[in-house]
Length: 372
Image (cartoon, rainbow, N blue to C red; front, top):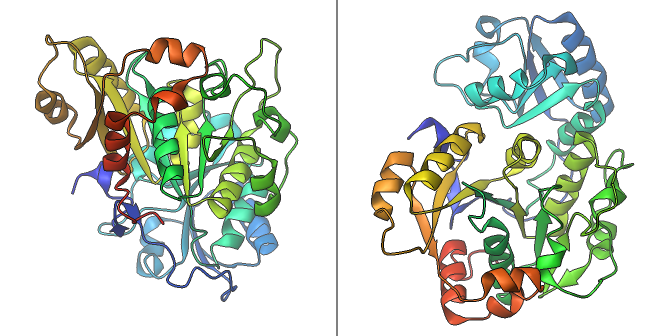
């Protein structure tokens, strides 16, 4: 098993296991192991864990932590940790300081960490995350779609996947992860549908009530969506803590969250880390394939697959691209006439009703009842 596929190993029908009974009954306080010799991170973690109601054990380095590593519910490591003990699970959260910048995400990828918490900014999010660690898995699965090159069709594919899931009775949220993409809502509908957009969550602090979150979102094609506004006016973007709160609420509100991550660094650094699976979309041509390989290096080390867009007769063999990227192929997006115009006119849902599109989406999502 390659490093990129190590994070989620317990998988049923393509997505990680849900809790056996789906209940929200609180369990004993989460057993949290903190591994760091950084005094600042130790003090911050103690304060945060106390607020979350967890039980904290600390170790100054990996050698001291090795015997209790795999028995902990949550493993937090500081940015001073550069290597993991052999044959131990990846840490749940990498803790660091805001001054460390993008280096934190590179370190997290190297260690296989599931989340990054930049302190003190992410203190509220981390407390919420740790408080949920004492409860069963919140349920909803997050599927990220990333275009390997410009114009690959990630937005179109995301819309069609969300539409297919909703048509099969799966409660679905389509999330716009690209603040510079012009607003995903413009591709979904020409109507102005009431509901909250990303800027409305810019002042969010702490947790969001799942029911209120679900009811606040606009709905089209049978699924809810959270979009950046399709306007030219400047908007205030939510900070990473607010984005994390939105993702937590989404998991507790929907069975499936499809995220159009976008190719910008911000979406990859934030939303991609909350995905259970990422599908990298590219056309079967040399230049887009090279671009996809570069994007792949920026993605977190989790379950990742490849989607190919049907192209011209001059396209490279799909298997050659899959082998070069070392990714399994999950499907081929069918060539549909009128997609460009449909995107401009808000008609992607109409095109998504075509049989080739439905067969593609059902295959990718394994819609044989597995997500219901």
